[in-house]
Image 1 (spheres, protein in one colour):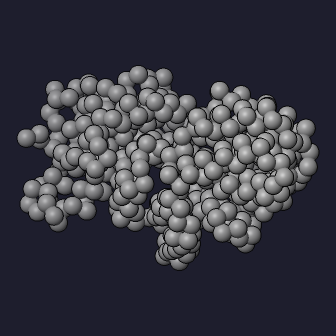
Image 2 (cartoon, helix red, strand yellow):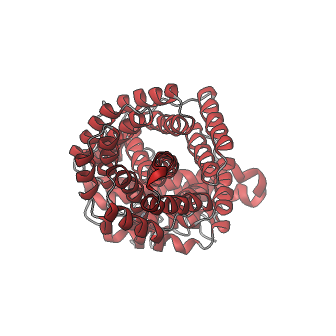
Length: 458
Ligand SMILES: [Zn+2]
């Protein structure tokens, strides 16, 4: 069995691969906080930051061996909360350690360090946490989902994931492939394990959306409504920017689903408040502008929506903003602009989900401008799309039928327009929720990292 404090020639517990003597021995005793590390990082003293973060990891590993391991041996059940705490705390420090490696231009060293750290805590949740860190590393700043999924595959099946944070990351990377039953089971497990109000709000809202996707709008609204109420009354209701952002998103979902101006206006106010925060990157602000625009669009305030989508587009080009601008122009009766926005999106270059949204906007425009070629092209494209949930697949099929029937049956045009709007809105609502829904993983992690950084700076 490993001694709590390694001997000189043992490998250092920080995972550097060096001997303890030449690595953290001189420093680990005093490493008790993240603050000096982030200060060193901010001052550009990356080598010092790396040494300090290594020493902090070493100190925590030794602390774990000295205190928690004997407790687990004596009474595993009683030691469980402490063990869970160790896993979370050491994982946070490892997060900083990885940041220091990156800051020092030693990004390539991280996988080896993580491999060596895999034995720091003897628990399957820790093993999963190491996979979690490897996945975050693989995703990188460009959020390479394919590389992330590859790294995450080491975890096995979703049922084997015992660590809530790894489960959350798994969900955000694999949500599209999971069926309703599988993902709602996983979401329930995250909710059951989560005790902080923001995570509960986030995942209860996702659960609500899951209900919507299988066609149970009422149950979905009830869940999101309940989640918001629970969040507002939670004893430790957080007031960080991230918490505000999460609340705003849940209010946006609820407002869209219930067509409720009060929720939409509150969401808008919160998003606008977030915009005043300097922590957001350019693309973060573009996302906030997009969401503000969504609140206007959901209230049919087309001019305001248009302005916000344009502001978002100014910050960062996105097919979603362009398609929404087409929708706004159509609603405002400006058909040439609607077509121009629609055609400015390269259909083959966008994701399948965006393609479906593109088809819906195209169907609405084709119908209004009576463009037979656009009708045909859109119907063909629609048939080739594959919405995941059966409910929306059915709506898609109805949309194709209705689109094609426009040409045959010109007399029943009024009814057709009404129907196509209805189906388009339904599908559109699904898709408009979906980009947010899928973006959650990305935004949440980026925001969380930012928030963590902000906390340690305070
Ligand atoms: Zn070390």
